[in-house]
Length: 341
Image 1 (cartoon, rainbow, N blue to C red):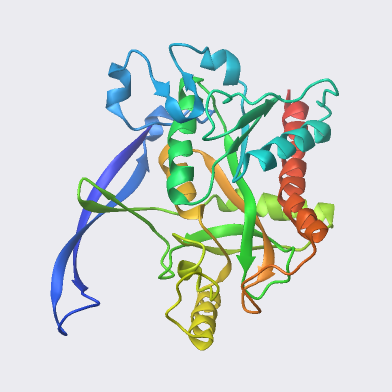
Image 2 (cartoon, rainbow, N blue to C red):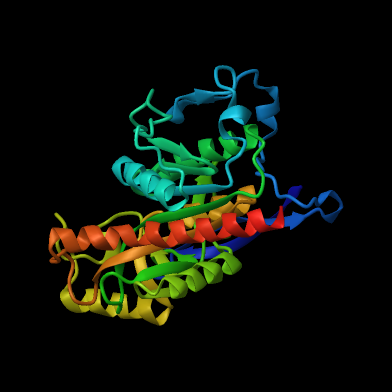
């Protein structure tokens, strides 16, 4: 089992506005985890840390249109070993069809029905041991989906689950079409952390991702030899425009030089790309015991501009690259597992 260790850190926060030296106390709660070795087993379960769930007769996964009282979750999802998640429902359906073909599980007569058809919030598809789920755009949207997905995997009694976010991003100093496998998620201040206010207190969570998994994905890319892949830090922002130093939003209070200075500082911090979901994704993987990775393709070099200029068919080709890499990885893993049986 995983247990919490709490530590409270007091600091001083200088206000950006007002008189110099005006400071106020803030309290940051850090969450760490220690593993109870006495309860280790050969397989790794999906953990939830919520004593209230045991008191609930029926756990309704509202945004997924599923519930423990109306669906046999172990029968539906108990064999899941891999989860692919990406922003749009359309992309996840395409990913499902691609992985089905890659694994030799495609059914010409199947349209891969949306398991979450009772809601328009997210879409979910399944082929064999692979679940593909959309997460929408930004930290709040993916966080809601992950809360309910993690509970789903827990209720289904899944073990040894690997989850990979596939998506698009803006690169920094990389050629468009390059795949970035995230080493660590940094915030807009280039700090490796995910901050969330809970009950009026700032909670800081670990954003390290599984480095072994990142290296395995890099190895798979070298085997494919179809596109450039790097491991590097990813900056996760709270919006698409000002938070990413774009000059083309409805509001902008900085210059081209300010933008370039910021992006070069990001590059110095090891940032290879910018997106809007990796921080909470990494934090929730750590909380739940899921082995996780973020695999994003860069659509442009942000040092050279803010808007996409590539032809539509080129962009479509770039967007397929993460699923090609992840599909190859899943295929390799399933082959390795079959050899052990």
